Image (cartoon, rainbow, N blue to C red):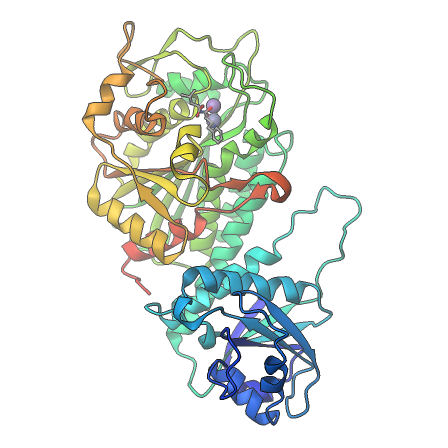
Amino acid sequence: MEFSIRALAPEKAKTGCLVLAVYAGANPAGGNLSRSAQLADKAAGGALRRVLAQGDLAGKAGTTLLLQKIAGLAAERVLLVSLGERADFGVKAFGDAVRGVATALKGLGARDAVLPVADFAVRGRGLPWTVRSAVLGLREAFYRFDQLKTQKKPAAPALASVTLAIAGAPVTLQAQAALKEAAATADGADLARTLGNLPPNLCTPSYLADEARKLAKQFKLGVEVLERRDMEKLGMGALLAVTRGSQQPPKLIVLRYNGAAKKKKPLVLVGKGITFDTGGISLKPAGEMDEMKFDMSGAGSVLGAIRALAGMRAPVNVIGVVPACENMPGGGATRPGDVVTTMSGQTVEILNTDAEGRLILCDALTYAGRFDPEAVVDIATLTGACVIALGHVASGLFANDQKLADDILAAGDDAWDRVWQMPLWEDYQEQLRSNFADMANIGGRPAGSVTAACYLARFTRKLSWAHLDIAGTAWRSGRDKGSTGRPVPLLVRLALRRAGRRS
Ligand code: BES
Ligand code: MN
Ligand code: ZN
């Protein structure tokens, strides 16, 4: 879907569908119409107010009402969308309204639509935010994954382009930049979603490596893929322990985007790339095990974020580091009780082979230190315990540098891809003690997401580092099962914020 932004009066918009926002509650004076709805209503001789007076549009944010050709307006259709009560209108209602618009547009034959974007403005957030959020929301709603279905049903929506209209004011460079940023971010989130949704027999470590090579070609990025023998030479005993039971060769993918001065230290993003997590010898129960294909979502978000930043030519230096392998049982698989030596030299007693994410990440984090990073952020579907703690709303945030944590919190709020900070106190470290090695890879049931982060912290002491546990936010289960593309929007905002771009 193509987006553009331009100055355009709503009543003059020659379009398949003009979207007009209204607040809840019948108000004969028209005070509940947004600015554009008022202008259109005036041009239509009060037709919109008459329709609304009949009470056909429910007040809940996101409810829509489709009207056909109205005299006085150039548009073929008008889609009224409720923003809910004016006093309650915030980011949540904004999202509901955008999703409501998308659902309605998907069912229409209209090839294009006009959305007066400023009418959706949320208090405290500027026009660039509104532009970005509208584009990202619409793109998410229009995302489809049907490449593996032989009968594509229902047929693809007709909508090909959306114009974000600004009435009575020139379009600023900032708004244009916001549009470009959002379109690239949506491309990145789509990539993350598709990699997540692909089945584990197709989306293997080799597939992820090929995908990185494709991105490198398309966007002129640096790419390097370390093979098993390279990992052996580097002493990555923890990563190698996880891949042992699998027939798929492991890959350690390094993807670099240089958009800033050479001497600027990079932001390194490390993404967990377990393309399928059976648990290994500590085998998972059968129920919903298919969802462990999403265990490479951290990796997908790193590739997606780099695609987004490269696509918008952001003035940042970013390096993606993706350890990718499968966690399978088998005659050669790692046993509970095995002790391995990590690249850092520290030894680990693997008490549970299902705590494999931290094993591949600890070696990748040690490797990340080689790039002399300004900061390192790892992204991982690391623990079921994080889902228990925060559900599917917020990702867990852990950091050894509060300034970095604050930046991530702000980026998450801005992108509405929220995180909640959890403790990383030394007090939890004792849960990782082992009788036979420097540490165990599990810390027992209490505070499972915290002890997982504490394990990683032992490998990042010299770095400014943060860890995002996205186990609850990377995908949806049930009827709407599928990858969310999170936290690509957060990561993009984080990189831009750190480069000084705050709006
Ligand atoms: N990939 C899982 C985490 C996970 C589980 C994410 C369920 C989303 C839903 C991870 O590798 C794992 O298995 N973690 C274990 C750790 C435990 C053995 C200490 C878990 O959370 O149960
Ligand atoms: Mn596991
Ligand atoms: Zn896992």
